[in-house]
Image 1 (tube, rainbow, N blue to C red):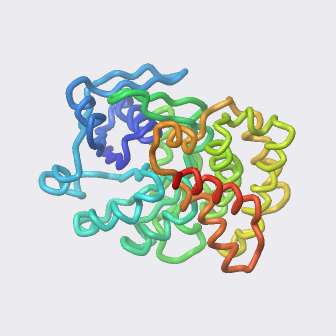
Image 2: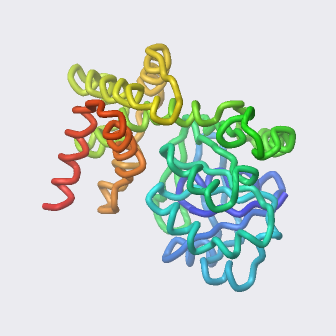
Amino acid sequence: MRFLIIGAGGIGCYYGARLQQKGHQVCFLARGEHLNAMRISGLKVQHENLNFHEKVDATDLNELLQHRSCKEFDMILLCLKTGATESILSQLQAWLKHSDTPVLSLQNGVDNEPLIADILGQYRTIGGLAVRIGGHILSPGEVEAKGPAQVIMGSWPNHSEPRVFSPDALKVYAETFNEAGIPTTISADIRYELWRKLLINNGVNPLSALTRLDTRSLTSHPVFGKTVYRMMQEVAAVSIADNVILSTQDIDEMFNLISNFDAIKTSMLVDKEKGRPLELDGISGAVIKRAAQLKTEVPNTELVQALLLQQESD
């Protein structure tokens, strides 16, 4: 198959490397020094179960628009930060309209798939989660990934809605991912799964950036661990705004999952250390926005976000 990876960071490069190693054609959309390094020296991916260092097809946005057709690709993987989704979709809107190639979002948050569906339609929108994986760029052309690196995908918003991407066609992609060493399952209700992941993301991402602690240090701390759990509870309190019900069992499962996972730096902590903008709008911001709609209090999420914004303004 032919894949386009939009967002060649730790997550996108890891999955792209897996697919290329299996013999699929993969194009990485990147920019800056990272793009130059990939063009000159190839891509290097460090993972406990993958040793990848190969030449890759890397391009920038202008080259993609001018010299490549959307019809060339069987699937587009969107692996950008949430804050960049609207912008990239706007820049690629006309280009994307030239085919029916489906777009799989492997991003944080619960607001990406609605944006994709608004522009391309539900029938081209595949919701997805990168599960139990941590990944980031070590240096231009070199990324590190950790964890089992699973994927959950599903037709957006669920398989019972009309005019969604064919669940039968989705099985072909899931099989392709599994054969490439990417443990992949299909969910009939991907919106529910995205909200379950938001439990973890809201619980640890902002707080890790604030405290500079990894996930294990956060969840095992006598005070911060309680705060992680409460921020997860606040996600569950507002999920009803998207017609999703999250139970105490969901919270406990996600808390236990992140507590027992390898100690990793969250993507937001890495961004903090490197002085990059934080993905607040797509994580804690999504919770706060829905809390305002429901007139529900989410004090822990609001406090952590406010402290991070204060640091950003100093």
